[in-house]
Image (cartoon, rainbow, N blue to C red; front, side):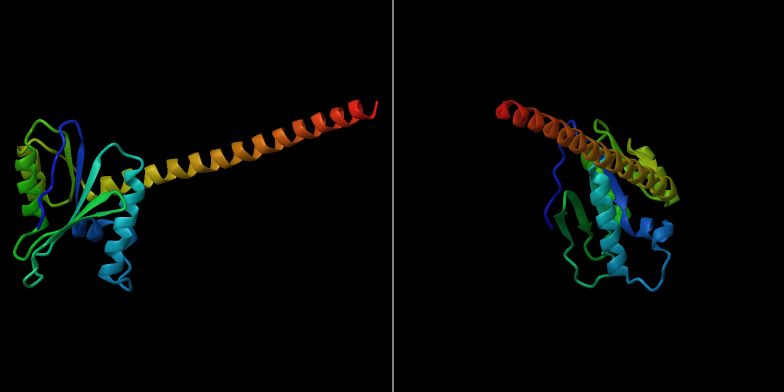
Length: 178
């Protein structure tokens, strides 16, 4: 499995994928497969990544996957990690926090109490799954409002421009006819 690289002045957000899936209301539907829930979380975090300055690293347990070598890849601007066999997302995140050190800003989204204590002892900050859900939902609402305002302003600008062009054309036609 390849190794993650960390830049000096970049803020990082690690997300414990299955922990989030187990806590967020939007994933409570048992008729949706785990694969679809993972993809949905990846898509939500891709959208969220456009509204934050943090680099997002989404980590899924590969602990129970026999002979899994693990994987790290880019998914539309976020980093997705599947840990190797016998490695939990918690252990992966702890190891990465040790690699990053205390000089960088790092947050971890998880509701695992033991993990939260380890995160704090390693110089990171934590956000619970519920707090993170609210943060993401609020960001999405702000984005929707901004998109709506942009559309309304664009419509007004086009209408105003069209009226001005009509007036100019009428004046031009009148001046040519004389």
